Length: 287
Image (tube, rainbow, N blue to C red; front, side, top):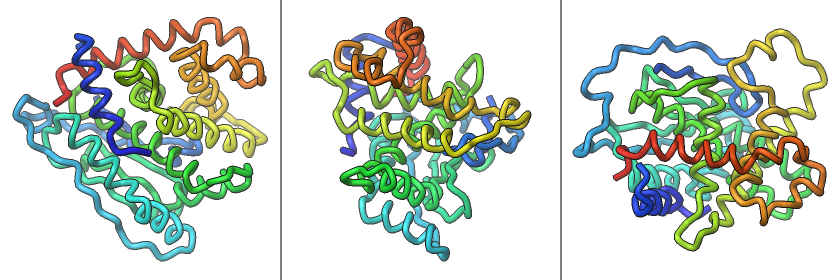
């Protein structure tokens, strides 16, 4: 994916005149449970201002397991984290430096830590993505995995924004973070169309959840009580926002049987509501 998604989005929003405490996430890509991280009281350093000078800084930690080594190589060889950090640094006012870690986590995962103010992308998540898309028969499974990781990062950026800017949200924060990923990747550029690579990224994000949903044959009380929506629900949400952002270009999502017609009928309105909400919340935080 190109490294200029957010700058284009920010400029487009400004020209158009638009404008809590989070949880550390565990098993983010598989819809697993989250471990609560008690939020600290916010001080002046936690609120972005016009002269905020923080930067997102990339670090690749050591990898020892085969899965982690493969995921690290995938991320490093394609400068995935560097490109994503550049997007943030060019676009958002950060009140402090934010470490972006590539790390071995011993599980496929990604998370934002509100106490440490860090984003972690687990090497195993990239490795699993490559396996998922290889099994699916993708011509370039690495590109598909990178796209899914890009969307995962923007999901974590949603949690970061909610913490750093003390954004008011209603409903599940995990759903709101999925919305931000969709908002960033699907908002049209100056030509009135979403970036093609960004569209592939959010589509592959949904496909990864579809694979996870297919692998889960039984659901229990812990799944129903989880802070994440069920994997299949996240699939339908993402599909709805993709469709709603441009119904004319995405009619195949209904005809191919992926998105139920009953849900699709309201997706354009869902997208408008999502777009309005996040453009309003982030208005004062663009550079």
